[in-house]
Length: 316
Image (cartoon, rainbow, N blue to C red; front, side, top):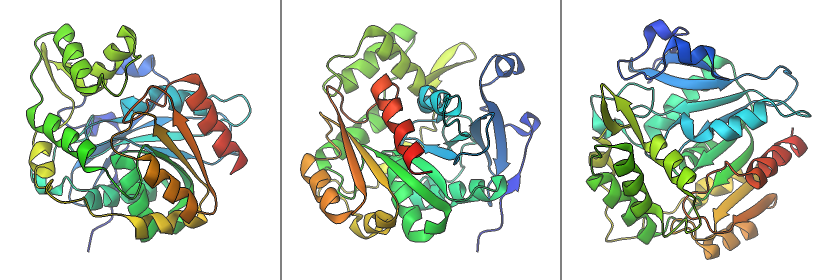
């Protein structure tokens, strides 16, 4: 049985791989949250506070190797929305972003990450939260629907569904296993562009730069990955010779929650066929397709953030 998580509450308890300085904290629209998992790792989340407490809080769950930084634009928009401002919490899984690396790489699995998210909800006293789940975050969201549906409110699944396409999964496994080490930011941008340009053919230089800075960070004068490289061992256990197990039962558990599914037009993870079947099986599901984006849409463009804000507003 997992022991309860503990509220850390202060940057004094930050893990060694913490990035944010106190000067940065004074100039950023979020506050840092540190808490301990049941197995004594120090985990990190960003809280974008709202001035009005009347509206439902939202948690944002990132993709496999990504972090709370991915949601900065969305979280800022939701927390400062002129009509429905809401508290937004963006969680870093263990081994990602500002959270401590796990000495046991076998814990880098969705069920353990789900337990950490549920711990976070407990220590923050959050109930029936809205959830934005990108890729891995959407998998965790579906698992939560089966494990603790009472914790959840309306759901946004970003480019993920109960069937994960093997072609896209193989692409992700390969780049996580073989991610090069850039010497400069120009190198980092080129690496990220080469991995993702097929899915994002109209990205600007500024967008490639932003994506690179969500994957790499500068530490002690060197560019390093913003996640534990041992994550490659965990994902390397996936057998790509057979289809990934479907999550239809977990998805069906979402059927009582209003759900918005966002799909990138060029996605190699969520197929149009799977999306159509999701619509057939879920009585309260809306969809949005993002043109000229693949896996996964950035959730940073005006039409995307506005659609998500409107979805939560009508389902408060």
